[in-house]
Amino acid sequence: MAGPYPEVQGGGSLILAWQVRNRRVLVVGGGDVAAGRILNLLNADALLTIIAPLPLHPEIQYRLTTHASRVAHIPRKFEPSDLDDPSIAMVLTAVDDPEASTRIYTLCKEKRIPVNVADVPPECDFYFGSTHRDGPLQIMVSTNGNGPKLASLVRKQIARSLPPNIGDAIAKVGQLRKKLRRIAPTQQEGPKRMQWMSKVCETWSFQELCDMTDEDMEALLGFYGPNAVPSLQQLRYGEQPDTFGYDGSFGWSCVI
Image (tube, rainbow, N blue to C red):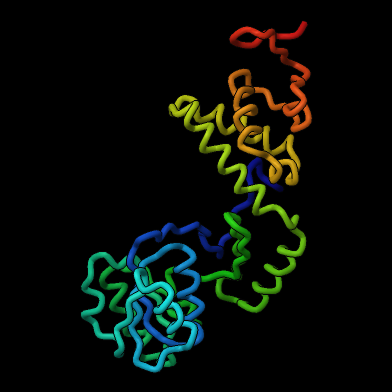
């Protein structure tokens, strides 16, 4: 019989958005897989050290040129001393040498550094899923190491079902949240901020959120105090939500 709470489904991973902005990540390998990892890390604003003999994959060489301030290259094979840097936040290996990969994995475990060994799920503290990106929106599909190609197919199907303007809508919501925090910054306001922002997202369509201007945001924030959310049309034509009316003075009055 089903219980009163969601059923526990073991065997999964804890999917997180790992913030590596301005943190040092060590990438061992200079081929195609390493190039993909490097792009993911640069998208997350990480600082990279690549350890790999020459020649490098053309894409990696390109990143070294275009992102010289964030990407360093050591042109040799991995050495255990490469892990002595205390600022290393994680290690990724993508080399065609199982013994070398396992050795790096073992050293990382000894130093308690999170590590991912490409295509060897048992030697991974975390996985790279198939990711869809649209501005601030990121959606990751993970098969927990069972089927990377299937993850890619599922991700593409999800992406096709999304509104084409959802990334822009999310960006505008982010701007509105920042403005809201400036007028209601205290921790005590947290629950009300969350509730009001939820109302905005539920009341306005994706297109209306995309069309929201700075002037619209400032006007909309005037409804935060009474915890009301007008439609975009009401906002622009000076109309009020059904349950509130503005009497022309400072503050709000209820309509009877």
